Structures are given as C-alpha cells and as structure tokens.
Length: 274
Ligand code: SF4
Image (cartoon, rainbow, N blue to C red; front, side, top):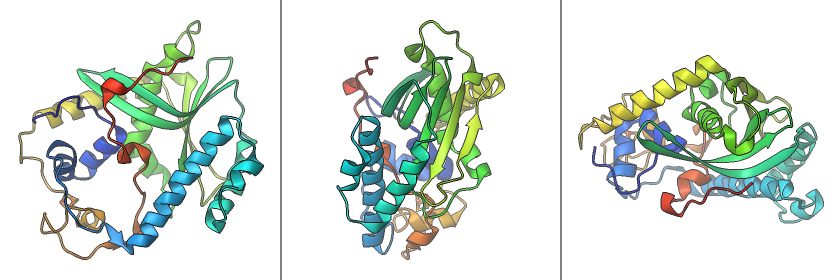
C-alpha cells in the first residue's frame, strides 16, 4: 500500500480493516469523502454521539477533580443525567493510587507506530494497571465480541509496552494488566479482560502479521466485506454499489469515539509527563 506521510495505526483504523478492508483503504489511504448518510434518522445518531462525547468529558472532569454536583449541572438531558448518576455509583468501586483520564498512548510495534486515547487508566502501588473503557452502545456487546475486538487486544498490548512509564522500579509482567468495560445500559455488570504472557506474545504476533498483510496489499486490492450488513452503516455504500437504504440506529453496535473523529499528527503528540 502507499502509506500516507506520518501514518499511524489505531484501534478504529484496524477495526475498520477487520470489518472491511475496502473501507480502510477508502477512508484512511485514499481519504475518500463520500456524502452518504450513515444511518437514519441522522439527527438521532448525531444526538447519541454528542451525548457519548459529553459523557466521556464528564468522567474526565470527575477524575480531574470537579465535583459531581457541578458536573451534573452542565446538562438537563435526562438520558445523560441517567448515565451520569449510574456512573457516579460505579465510580465508588474504582480504587486506585494514580489515575489518568483520557490517556494518550503510543507504541512502536514492528516497524509501525500505534496511537490511542484510553478513557481511563488507574494504577496501584503494587504495580497493577486497569484500563477502563466506557461503552455508550445502545446494545451491550457480548463477551466474545469484546474479546475479539481490536481495542481489547491493542490497548492491553500498548499499555504493556508502556509499563515502564508508569512504574520505573517494578518489574513488568503482563499479569499486572487488565481491561474493564463499563456499559451505560448495564451499569452494574462490567466485563473484565485479564492479560498474561501468552496473550502478550500472541498479540504482538497478531499485529505484526496484520500490518504486514495491510502493507503488502496493493492499491485497489483491498477487498469489500462479504458481510453486507456492515454496509448498512457505511458512508461508502453507494460508491460500492451496496445499496442506498441506511440501517437503523437501534441496530448500530457502536458509534465512533473521539479517536476516530480527530485526525492526529503524531509529530504533535507529546508524551504525557508523570
Ligand atoms: S459500503 Fe460495504 S463494501 Fe463498501 S466500504 Fe463500506 S462496508 Fe466496505
């Protein structure tokens, strides 16, 4: 492939590749604009996306020290207020010594640069790290779906590769890392994904092979997905002759998060100081 200058990989880009290689090519390599409405009604999807972004901001403010009362005064939206009240209850179960909301993380895997924004990282004095992710999906994903997600693999791996940034005097072990998903629509039941040496090694091999496959694919050889359900929510469906009718928001698993909406220049990314 012809890699754009300063190209980096992220969980959103690689998930797009897994879902549909052609979408990855159109979106990130060819940067093809296409004016299709992704889902109907568009106002509903935009509203849900705005709530999701606002909710992530509330949690960031909370862990930066703003009081819950002040945070909740920023909205009158009943859905957002309900999410926030649920999160306030859940937050009392999070124990930590240090906390890093909206943590920007980068890592070199093979010859490629990876980048991500993690909703929350907490650490304790024993060298344990928990990666949190807040899910505002309309439907709660299955454990198997989350286990297969690029996000679950990549965030644990990148955190493992950054371990020395958190703990200079504790020896690294993948077992010290875990990822926990929290869901607005099932706030009392999180899903936890531990990490270990076997996963640490197999994830490195997985991403090296994945990137090698991508980099060895020539222009216009990125194939369209065979699962046409994925096209219902894709901007490019008319370009790909995969139909005009969009899907409904109720069947849309997940809306893109911040990382997907911002086009980062890695040269501008500064490492967070501890
Ligand atoms: S419309 Fe379908 S085939 Fe075309 S890029 Fe999107 S998901 Fe892939």
